[in-house]
Image (cartoon, rainbow, N blue to C red; front, side, top):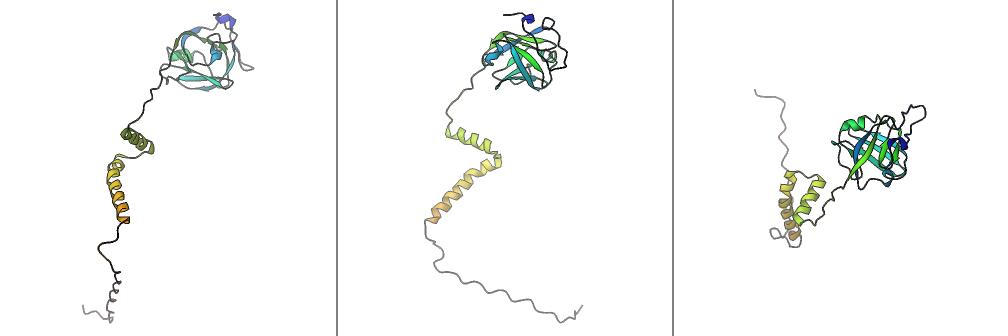
Length: 193
């Protein structure tokens, strides 16, 4: 593995860059799913996002997340032991860094892969009908009350469907409409009060 001096850092025009020999390389752990260019020939990668606990580098269509311990363990990431290791890099969006031979070298420091880690596979399993219904209800955002009403509404719907197939049993003749009630009596205009 080449030394830090063998990997030259890159920068935007007008930015002062310290030599790679002066950059301190801090240890990092690379995912086995990290982009191949992390271990390939050194070349430029662009900083596309910078957050408190993560920095995202892009080369071509691939992205390499640099992750602090507090960050979500993305499966293709390069993890550092301390958030300060990311802060030391002093990266901003648009910067270019040199990535290759297991190293990420920026103007103010760098990272070197000292170990690898294998992301856990997400287990898959067949869901029971009850578990599937619960999962679908959660996706649909149904509330507990709606879940409690579900069986009642299902029974009512089943009854209505069954009734559609039967003839009415209570009324066999149409019912005539009731006459309207008479209007109130008109007052004569004088109140006996």
